Length: 120
Image 1 (tube, one colour):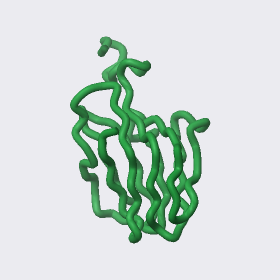
Image 2 (image 1 turned 90 degrees about the vertical axis):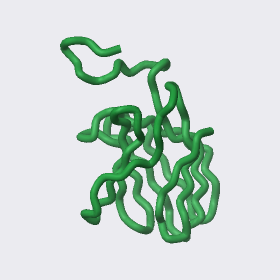
Image 3 (image 1 turned 45 degrees about the vertical axis):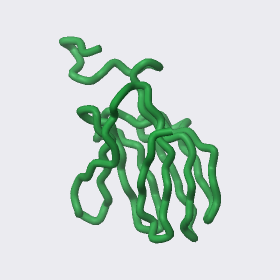
Image 4 (image 1 turned 120 degrees about the horizontal axis):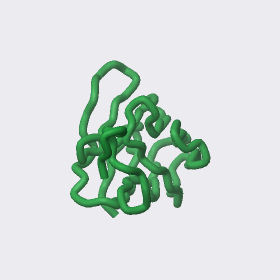
């Protein structure tokens, strides 16, 4: 729901996207820091699966921050897309198209630290 006072979708259980589960195939820890909901912050050990949940913000200025062996990637939900941006200056990219809401995604972190997500 969009109101005149807020250009963003109303955040509630019916309109959310999130990361549910992380398959970390790398030799580094993967850390999740939700800059809007710090209680969602979690870590997944190297070469392991973490049964984590991390809510994805609809605000790029308060994103979900994911630290991998490659670097820091911020993730947010904008215009029905899950978007990402690495801290190396390569620019924004689309991780997934959001076809319905709520929608959760499993994250895979490759051996090189790259991130991909798949609908659960």
